[in-house]
Each structure stands twice: as C-alpha cells, then as structure tokens.
Amino acid sequence: MRTALVVLLPLLAACDRPEPAPPAAGDAGSLAPWSRDAAAPGERAARAGTSGAPPVSSADPAALEEILAAARAAAKPPGDGSTAAKIGTSTGVAAPSASALPPDPGPAPARAPRVEIGLPTAQASMSTPAIEKAARAQLYWDLVQRCRGPDGKRLPPDAVRVEFNIDAEGYIVATSIIGSASDPRHDEAATCMRRELAGATFRAPPGARGQPTRVTATVPSVD
Image (cartoon, rainbow, N blue to C red; front, side):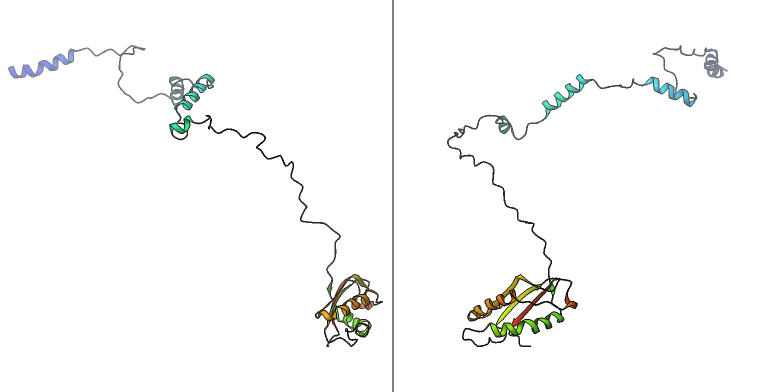
C-alpha cells in the first residue's frame, strides 16, 4: 500500500500544474518552439523583403576614394626596395651640350618611287606562218644581198638575229627593231639589217592583220 502511494503522488502533482502562458508579442527574450510556417507564399515573400538590410541605391564616392587609396598604399612597388627608391632620381651623368650634338639634317629627302606609270604597251603575240612566209618573200632576200660580211661575201647561216614588231595594220614598228650578231666581225652587217628593216615597205597580208605580232628570225636562214 505504501509503495502504491509513492508512485501515484508524482502523477497527481503533474496533473494539477497549470499550463505555461504563451509568450507576449514583441517579447525579445522569449523563445518560441520551431514550427512549420503556415503563412501564404505572398506573405512569406513580403516578410523576407522587409526583414533584410535595405538595398543600396548608389555608391558613396568618398568611400570608393578611400578604398582606392588604401589599395594603392598596400600595393608593392615594382622591383626590390633599392630599385624602386632610385626611380626619378638623377643618374649622375652630365647632359651633352648643344655644341656636341650633331647638326639637324632636316627632313629626309623624298625617295623616288619604285613603280613608275607610263604608256601602256601590248605584248605582241608570236608570228603566224603567213607573216613568216611574207617576210621571207619581201625582206630576207634583200637583207642577205645588201648586208654582207667584212670581206664582201655573203654571211654564214644564222649570222645575225633580227627581231621586230608588226602593228595591227601590218607595218613594221621601226622603234622595235633589234639586230645582233653572234660574231663581232658581223656587227656591221647587223647594223645594216636594222637600217634596211627600218626603211622597208613591208606589210603583212590581210589575213594576218588585226593584232600586234612579234617576228624573230636569223639571217641567213638555213630552212
């Protein structure tokens, strides 16, 4: 019986203890137990927006200047301390006097351009068989007979090389005539051929006209 009373007395005392009153609103010292927030999503967003720090609308220029000044002061100078200390100091070398300096050459002369623009010239095409045939008939015979060697005899085969242009009308262009001898003894004969070609009345046949043509041949020809 005594044992039963000892067990029941604490239980009866707990039933008679009054419940604790809820904490008053605004009491910063009271701690409320954690519970799931049952507020609406809109209310939670409004509550989070008002509970944080106010947003910064603009930066303070004075604060930025102070931060930059502190950063410059904390930055390390270039190189070691002794090198940085010499920056801006005198080197100890005397400056050259004005009389020791070389005279001013003045502006550099303008360089001649490497590219020169002149009258356009058309590259003559190779001679056609018709022009070769007409040249042999009208020119080569006279060149061989009038331009001879130093002993008055006929030149050996291929002694002189002649070149000349024929314009689109079929006439020889006198300024394009070239005559060269393989043997110095035949230089006079080459000069004679240039003179004869400059005064020749040669004209290419009608079928070979219409474009400039370059004629190259050796006199006397072996073919």
